[in-house]
Length: 196
Image (cartoon, rainbow, N blue to C red):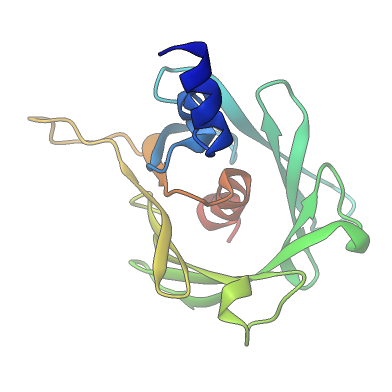
């Protein structure tokens, strides 16, 4: 492609370099999630085995509060999920101050085989479905489907292997669909798999 032809395509809004960036792709993204044996710590790797996110939990002996923080690969805190008096809430960064509130979680169904949690964004309400998410599945089987209105935005499932009878519950796959905030999805899963 000549320089003039490339310039003409850029003027028409076609940028070949953008298609090389993963964020520009309109396809689902898979992660492998590893759950620590003790506590609710998680590590999240991309398809190439690179660390992308990690979750670390802490609790306070002076109160019933528990906090799980989602970090990026460099150790920057992205969202903290805190169990406060009214239940689980998500906050920006390493905070649990009300001004940094991102979402609240409310359990609507819980049984041995099914859990359902409603996540309401801080700038919305349960009455506005565009600002709420539903998480439905089984924490024991590491299965969770996240819905926004009637659309699936992310799913998890165990990593099955052919001819293997017993599967590890310490490793599972997370698929995040296009145009969805991956950090928000992981923050919601912190609560689903380790919060309640």
